Length: 327
Image (cartoon, rainbow, N blue to C red; front, top):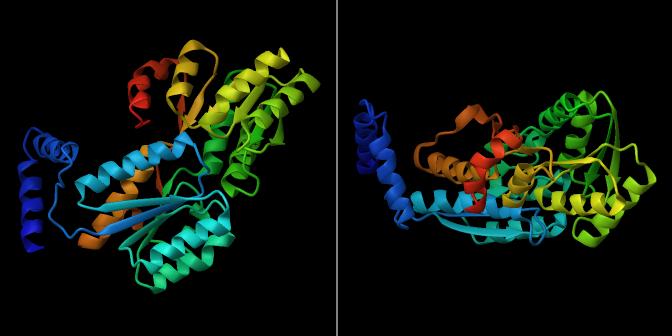
C-alpha cells in the first residue's frame, strides 16, 4: 500500500504543472479504457442493488458509470435489482452472506431496507446509498448518499414550467410507494404557480401508462403540461398526447438518447437530468477511497449530482453522450 500511495502522490505532484494533471488523468483513462486497472490495490468486490424494474434504461447508465470506475479501481462489480422492496432487501442479504467488500443500495422504499443495511454495517461492510433515500441514508448507517435532492429537482421543474407559461400540469407517478417520486411531484407543486394533479400508473405496463395518460388528457383539455418521472415514460406520454389530440407539452425527469432526440426535434419540452452515470461512477470511487484511504467526500452529507435542466439549446451537445450510454 505504501508503494501505491507513493505512486499516487507522485502522479499528483507531477500533475501540478501547467497541464493541470491532464497527462496523469489521460494515462488513467487509457488504462481503464483498455480494461486495465489504474491502481494495484486488492481485487475487492463491490455489489450494487437497486429498486429498478426490468428494461429501465436509467439504470443501464448507472451501471455504465459503475463499471467504468470498477475497471479503473481494480474492483469486481456485481449488480442485482428488483422493483419489489422485499426482494431487493433479500438481494442485499445475499451479498452480505457472500461477504462482499462494499455495498451500494437504493432506498426508494426505505422501511424495507433499514434492517438489512444495519446488518451490512454490523458485518463490517461499508454501504453507500445512491439515487433515492438521502433523508434516511445517514441514520441507517450508510457512509454517504450520492444523487439529487428530489424535492429540489421538483422545484426546478415547477420553476421551468412557470418560465414556459404553463397553467395546469399532470405529474405521472409510475411506481407507487416510491418516496422519491412523491417528492418530485410535491417539489414541483411547491414552486409551480399553476395547478398540479397527480396520476398514478403501473410503470411496468407501458400500454396501461399510455391509456391512462390519454384518458386524462381527453377528459381535461385544459392540461397544458405532462411531467413524467423517468425518461422511458416520456415517449409514451408523447404517444398518449397525440392519440388524445392534446396540445400539452411533454416534459420529463431524467435523460436518455430518445429524450435528447425528442428535445432536439421539439416533441419534448425539457428534461431534468440527475446524471446517473455519476451516481454509479462516484459510488464505486467513494467506496474504493474509503477502503484504501478512509476518505469520504462531504463529511457524510449527500453528494449532489443534479438537478440540471436540459432544454433544446443543450440537447444537441448531449446527444453524443446519450447514444454511448453515459448521459
